[in-house]
Amino acid sequence: MSQREEFQRTIGYGEAAIGQLRRNEIPAYPRNYELWYTYCAGFNHALNKAVNDILRARGHISADEVHDIYSQFLAPSRLGDRIEEVGTRLSDEINDVVNAMEQTISANARYCDSLSASTTELLGTTDQKRVLSIVQGLITATRSSEATNRLLESQLGESRKQIADLQESLDAIRFESLTDELTTLANRKHFDQSIERAVANARESNETFSMLITDIDHFKTFNDTYGHQTGDQVLRLVGLAVKQNVKGQDIACRYGGEEFAIILPRTGLDHARTVADHIRIAVMSKELVKRSTGENLGYITISIGVSTWKPTDSVASVIERADAALYLAKRNGRNRVCTERDLAVMERRQPGRVA
Image (tube, rainbow, N blue to C red; front, top):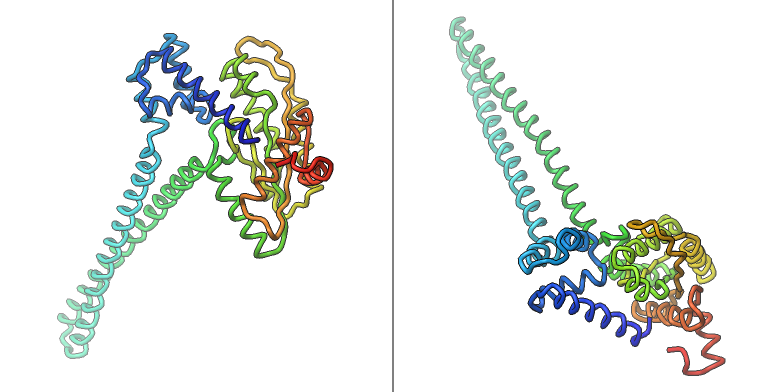
């Protein structure tokens, strides 16, 4: 997407956010604007659902409700608080295990001392009553030691389960932090991390990779005409088409509002173009029906740009070529795939037109 198109798209979200602030008479504080901008851009499905539920029930939303929704879905500390909570529980569990092990080690040391003392005493006496008393004391000490060890074994088993559960919680938090909730694809943060790794791996192994950037054609018009809920349905549809046409180590992400990016490891330009065309056709073949009314909305299309990593590339340059190819696809009529090879051809024909 060109800088001009990106400007127009984001200004559209901003104007829509201001419209929501006015419509609901919500003060235009930065956090309120952030909530409505996120709502209008459709980045957070759970937030949109919470807002839409209130709007459907009463037709408007209060400043207090906006504050509560912001705190629940957007507050920067929300994810950090959950990580801190799990980390504290994990630390407590480890401390409990350490304490139990220290107690068991101490008990076993006392048992060893008792064995040593009893052995010395047995070697120094022939009195049968004393021998019997020493043996009974050893039996009691042995049973006590066995009970302590069984208690530790039980506590270790329970702690192992608790730690496994906490690890799952951390994995879930990590997955959430890297996943776009609406489409269930990876989010922009995941993409940024993944493209850095892809470039580093390509430099180290000298194996290329390709990347695709897709954009839904005329999405803003569609969104304005049919509403954000139907727009969300479109985004899920495209996300599903992307997911169904990637495999293995491929990384599919929601790159921006209506843009998706796919990283294809160990994939050349021709194969990447084929994958892109499969995604384009899959999207175009799905008929869209408005869930609330059953109205047939026809078909949607996407445009895709493709680039392939070269040894001279940086992260920025490989993204820029895919983005420029996407822009070329949209300029040439949309609903098509263009690659960096098409960019080169266009540049030869019309120097300075593609940038």
